[in-house]
Amino acid sequence: MFGINGSELIVLAILAVAILGPERLPEYASQLARLVRELRRMATGAREQLREEVGPEIDDVDWRKLDPRQYDPRRIIKEALLDDVEEAVRPASAPNPARRPATVTATAAAATAATAATAAAPAAAAASMPAPPFQRLERLGEGERAPFDVEAT
Image (cartoon, rainbow, N blue to C red; front, top):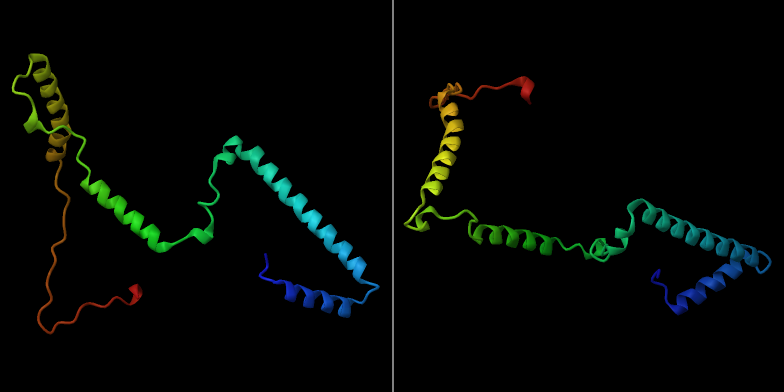
């Protein structure tokens, strides 16, 4: 748990007996046991409180996935890049108008015309609005220095 092997544990026990002495060692051992019990009780209480607040779906969470030791930036970047490629390669869900059947009924033609009219209304409104003004960029002459703004730096 703490990266301590058997021989290191024995050395630590001998040091504890030597430093604390045999008369105080049982008192400190009981305090350590009390501390461990209290920590377990607190962990159990936190787990129960979390289950009450979140609900039963907390049991369905894959906690291994959220373990920070599983964090591998190379894998995350690779998955993100592959997701973008899959989205770019995936065919569009909109139907292709060139592949429409040759026979179109009158009802379908009327519905298509109505859809085109409603789609054209916002475009016509946008065309009637004045274009936003733009600032003309002037190039500096050769050897001319760029303006310097003291407050901007």
